[in-house]
Length: 237
Image (tube, rainbow, N blue to C red; front, side, top):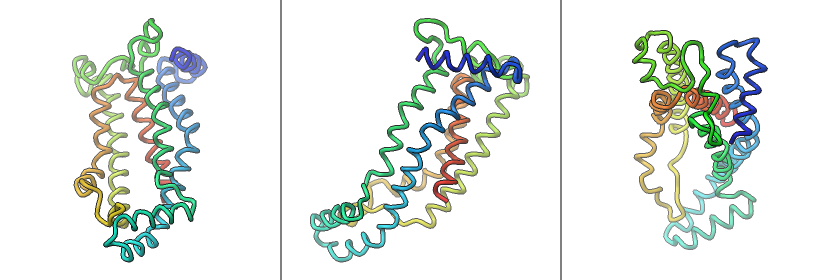
């Protein structure tokens, strides 16, 4: 963990001539984008897996009509089809799981007050007038929502809201064009109806995250969320 903290600190020193007191904040944004770029091949693999599974849906629908009264035979036929087409049913899930350690590491780095038993130096820097170690509640207590620090959060909330609206519209379009998610016995995944209703609104939950975590972690969340929105729009267009 301290190794990554040192890397971000060194990057901040390089950016200081350009960003001055906000160099550490700029370093967090660039470091997060760099890590997302490193795991981008996994996102591309997930997109290919999703596309491959989508292309199999007509054949799976035919198998469901043929073996709908025999769930065990239907399940074997679907698995055989995936094997024949060399498509893993988990092809779109595993790459995302592999990204989780990197995301957890970055979030921990930008939200933990201590690193390696010492104070986290990153949280001692500022973004404009807002300390990276403070939260929105601190900004409200020091000048209010439209004070110097409060305006930083207003900008972040505006960006997150714009990304959330973009994701909402995109998710609604995809769900309107897509078919219900099937399971091997020809039924539907339990709870999928409720999930489909909630899914378009999930991006708005990021607003809550940004409001309660330290500003350094909020910058990570905003950068990563924005990257994900642009990346998914490009890969799943």
